[in-house]
Image (cartoon, rainbow, N blue to C red):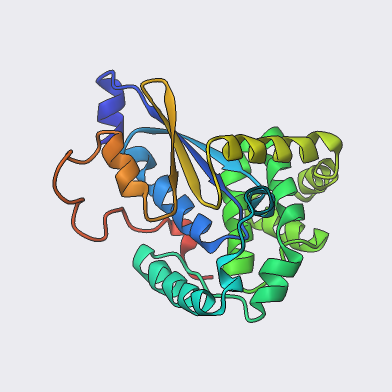
Length: 242
C-alpha cells in the first residue's frame, strides 16, 4: 500500500514522536506509530527526550506517585500491552527502577546514537525498553547500555565510542534542547506526537491518541469509528519473545 501511494505522487506526512524509554506508554505509542508508518506513508521522526525534565518544567508528577492511580496504572499498562502486543512486564521494584534510577544516561546514549548512527536509533531504543520494561534489567549502568547496543546490532567499538560521546556537552545540550522543543509544543508528559496542519503544529498526547492523529491526517473518515480492533498491524518481529 505504502509503495503504491509513494509512486502515485502522494507526499509523506511528517510525524514527530517524542519519547523516553523510562515510560511504558511511550513504548506502546512508539510501536504503534512505527506500525502505521508504511500504511499511512509517514515521514516519521523519532525524537528522544527526557521525561523527568518535562515533569519538572511543568510541575507534573509521575502518575504512580498517587497510590490509587498507581494501582490502576499497573493494570492499565498490562491490558494495553496485551492488546497492543508489546511484551511489557512491570519492574518488581518500580520506585527504584523507574523513579530513583530514571533514564538520563540511557536517553543521553540514545541521543548520541541519533546524532552519529541514526540508522540504529529505533533498534537501540527498543532494546533499552526491552531491558527495563520486559526483562526488569538495568538501563543506566555502562555495561547495561552496551549490552542493549550489542543486541541492536552495534559493534562494541562503536558502542563504546557512543557511550563516551553521550557524556559530552554536545549531547547533553542536544537532549535538553529537544526536551525544551517538545515543551514549547505544550507537552506535559509522554509520549507526544506532533504534526503540522496549515503551517501550525498540533500536539497529541498519549499512546491512545494515534488513531485521532490519523483522523486529522485524513487517514480515517471524518465521521464514524476507527477500523475494527485492533486498529493497527501486528507487532514487529523484533518484539518476539527471547
